[in-house]
Length: 183
Ligand SMILES: CC(C)(COP(=O)(O)OP(=O)(O)OC[C@H]1O[C@@H](n2cnc3c(N)ncnc32)[C@H](O)[C@@H]1OP(=O)(O)O)[C@@H](O)C(=O)NCCC(=O)NCCS
Image (tube, rainbow, N blue to C red; front, side, top):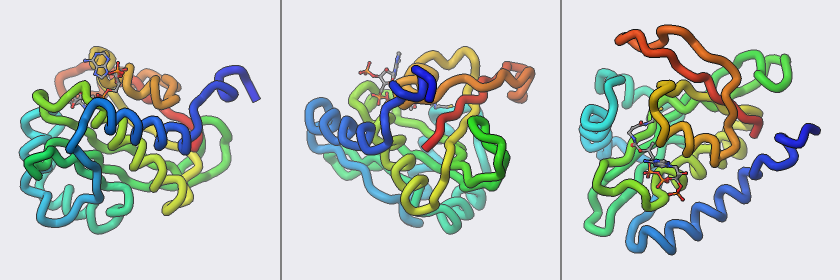
């Protein structure tokens, strides 16, 4: 095991840090599994926060197929203010070359006025725990714009590392970092 692997936080540690952080910084907020009734709010948040938008059926399909790893953040007034949406894929691993189940973080966003309270971290903590325990995923990966420092620093805090740069990945020509970690 390398030094990096030794110091990567475990999913259980991440999950309990998330609970503490929510209690301290986001009193009254909660994280729960998404339901069909949340799709309209999720689509709204996606369009407001990200240039990568998808048709409504895409959200519905991921909810139906991978609903155990699709979470929303709820504000004290019961509004949905963030989400994380995933897919489970069979692919060769980044840390071991066998074919394995990998939790792909397809999209995550928190409305601007609710950021820096630990909601992004907590959404990811829930998705990673479900990916590992409910879907038996052995790794997780995601793509992120090379200019998206807030997201990159969130993912590093969660133990992801850059495994590749994909040139011109986004429609506007920006490169993506592919970031991954074992589960
Ligand atoms: C990325 C995003 C989901 C983070 O959500 P959030 O709820 O603000 O994140 P958290 O409060 O849980 O932050 C956890 C950690 O991430 C890092 N982080 C989050 N926002 C940051 C910022 N603006 N600058 C630097 N680091 C940041 C910090 O390490 C932070 O820990 P700290 O607050 O103790 O310093 C949010 O900024 C967002 O929705 N951005 C627009 C959509 C997006 O870019 N999605 C990712 C696409 S790949």
